[in-house]
Length: 122
Image 1 (spheres, rainbow, N blue to C red):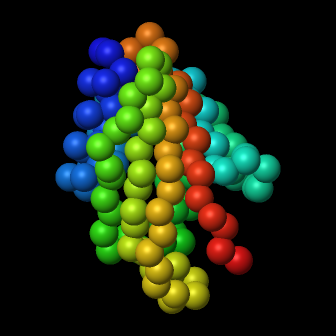
Image 2: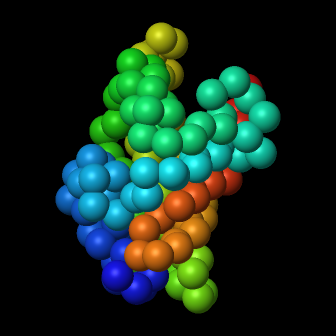
């Protein structure tokens, strides 16, 4: 698959609320996932096992009320997407809306890297 096709599928599935299908269909087994600069605990993971643990942490800590992915911007083997999410932090009960930019790298028809950029609100 070409980068623009991968990007379009990822956005479509995310906007349908299917966050598992992209991992199954579009991601490399050797995926690297980075939150912001990757320095916080759990902010840098490799492989599907790391992605699975990251997803479990997210499910335990956040209720997602709505999520929207923008149209992708594609440049050669890279693409970016803006995500906007309305969530409740389960431990605190605090509801908020946040946005982030996700940047993806594609090699050999699969996503090999994803990195998310957002403001930490602490």
